Length: 250
Image 1 (cartoon, rainbow, N blue to C red):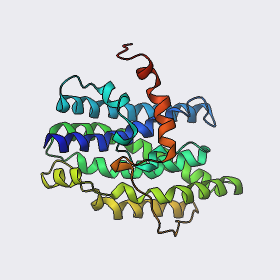
Image 2 (tube, one colour):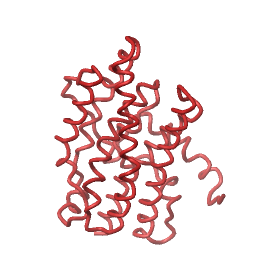
Image 3 (cartoon, helix red, strand yellow):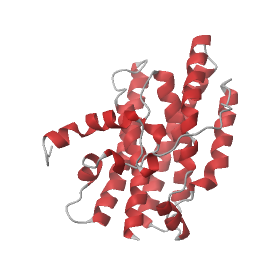
Image 4 (cartoon, helix red, strand yellow):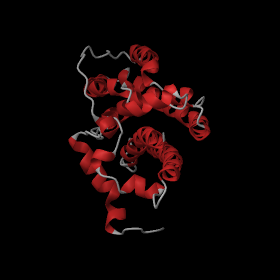
């Protein structure tokens, strides 16, 4: 049970960690000061949620495990985030599209997770829902603004959606750990929110005059530790200080 719970927490937390890291890279590079600050604040929200998960994971793992060691001292194959959130910031449209496709899933997940029989996971979900509701509104508004904007903004947003769509189905892949915990009423069977996800996304795309990609080919592997080439570079940046100066404290 403890092993399943620990791995399930990583599955939840790593998405927030890597999505937050990607947004944090945008700090100082947003299209406007207000948008730049908003993206940074969303990144901080995700890091705050990650800390709550990792503190719980460290308690379960025991020994000398800490939230920092879990975040910074694992190898690439030990991260369980989906491939979607590790995709790079190619341009602002791509960043916003990636965030929206994750945000919709994240909110639907938390709305289920708040009823978990695990009181800690339930508490984290309840605390995070308000933050993630804002994330969905922010990224969704930018989808509409760019999709139904100029010819150039529409083309860039459609290209971003087309490029990222192949990573969405992995969000609903149910791991063995998640399946076991769902049967105990502690975890969530994410396949149960798949229809609602695609319905919500499709409605917003229609409002933004964007086409839903017709491709039925999807990539996966992140939840089992098989990542894209972008992940190694991301971790090299994220882990540098902790690996260069072991056990450092601020």
